[in-house]
Length: 586
Image 1 (tube, one colour):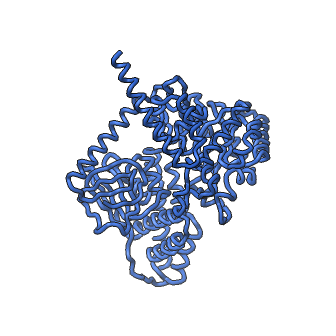
Image 2 (cartoon, helix red, strand yellow; image 1 turned 120 degrees about the horizontal axis):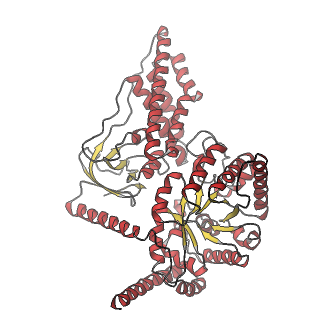
């Protein structure tokens, strides 16, 4: 058994098909000065062919998994048009009289090495894009062919690295799963694998006793990040059983998709979805979600080389609003910075980026891009029940300044006779302790709160949730976190505004009694968590959760809190079993 990184969930079992890397060792081929013009013509022909091929792949991807995912290849086209990259190639040819393919290979290696030296994993993953584009160009210059994948059998694809271009050529009906030696969770291949629903494990470099060969039988677990090579029969049967159980559970949960999420004592909880793209709306519909509780708009700004224009944003927001059929759609304004960077948007280097120039701070500083986004959201508001939410609010002034820009956007649209919802609701994320502590003041300025537990926990505890060294200190069940949550909810209730939860804790079944105990009736979570949480709600009583909450708030340690929650979960299961037995006997 080899432990890697689970990049896309699911279990896959089958024979490996190993594809070679698109890399070649090239001799240092020199040319005569008289042949320079011919070499440049070869270079330009290779660029034209590469662009044509990328455009074709982009169209294929758009057809398979959606327009947004296909924008990955806009970045590839941009590399071929990048004057810095092309000037490097041309300078090598002009100054050193090297053949086109040799110059391209040297330029690729130079830029890939530069990106690999950076500490940021997102930027490291971009090195693969440069390598992918460069190797595609080399392929045309050298007359090489793409590897031919099996068409008459299913397989688990194995590669050293997997570029978006290679992934685009996969026959989805034949590919069971993916395994790569290198790569990261933020790589384009990982993003596309998740969008396609293909199990993917990466990061096996240096962990295998011997290389995987074509024909080896593999088991990959995309949730646990595990790969088994030629396992014994008992392990194969174990994973077959696990896969059958997982499929049965998924089918069983699907049966409750259209049932209201109601506790045993009749309290309805609204379960909404956190999404990042229009593509996820099909999954949202299958869960019977009450709406979109968090639309992360920053993903519209990523994997491209320029800011999205108002019209493009409007079309995306409009599609979401239309698809949700008047169910609430909460659109969070741009939340970049911290661990979310944009290649084309130069953010300052900071010692503490999570505490720095990010989210609403950028929007209020760059009012031009903020107003563009607000106009797009406002225009989409006439097509459904759209709401606006500001991230990382820490003061009353920020809310007032953001609302002033929103008012300007409204006035502009009104002057242009463009329809929009003039009474659109505006809310804020409570994810900074300062916001939680002045929640009573903020509640007088907005229509709703949404608690972002991911950041709130790290800020309350002063623990960077991305830092592996102190990851054990990131504790959502710390007594300070519970008290901060109660303080926020109480302030919202006093001012009669709704409060929901949209962080990871919302989808954590263990935390459910906390939300019921606090009187929260709306949770927003990943699409995959909705039916699991609904299943637990159907077995729970709010009254018992309220009694439990009093005990939880009296606990002095997170260990004591977790112990009480686990005891409560066990008791709820017994209550459900007894009720079912009594109903059957009756």
